[in-house]
Image (cartoon, rainbow, N blue to C red; front, side):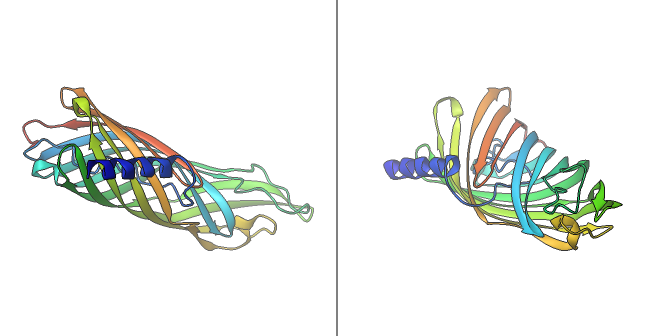
Length: 269
């Protein structure tokens, strides 16, 4: 059993690092499958940073890039078997070449869509099954929603006449579910990896429709291009109840994040 699990863990790490077509997305890190609360159960809190990329399609295909900073409160059950958590944070949004024209009769400046500091929230849950020894397997479900709209302006000339348009990305949300195998090494270090499925969408609207710039040509619902990816990470105890978590997610694009978790030794209640 141990050899089989190690092979699965290794294959999952390769899945993360190389060629799984899909989307790399999350409202923050997924984390190890087991709760980081104390053995008897209780609270843990986290602060994290996540760099996130995702391919969307609707009016053409484009790459959404985000930097997300968040705070999390979680409650884990006894023996690390389950956990529920909530997050709140802020994020920016850059759409690479979101305003770049595809035709000579339309010019635009700037080429990229950029917006800062929109709040988001996330709720999630995970379950964990120890498999004996240092190994275990778990699953999670996580959903995120952005409370505000992202907006940016573009100017240029269309058929020789000047124009100005504002593009808004509204109602951006995502839901992700995955499974992972974990292996606990010396000093309580946890290695984990596995696949995930993901769905995300947003409504894109423009104050003026401009030919040659796909996102401005018509209002549309944008959806993530594909829905399968892989992830892997490491959780390292730092002492005094603190843990450092680093995680990567790979598909057509690469995303990564770091987080620090504090475990309340008295349960937190």
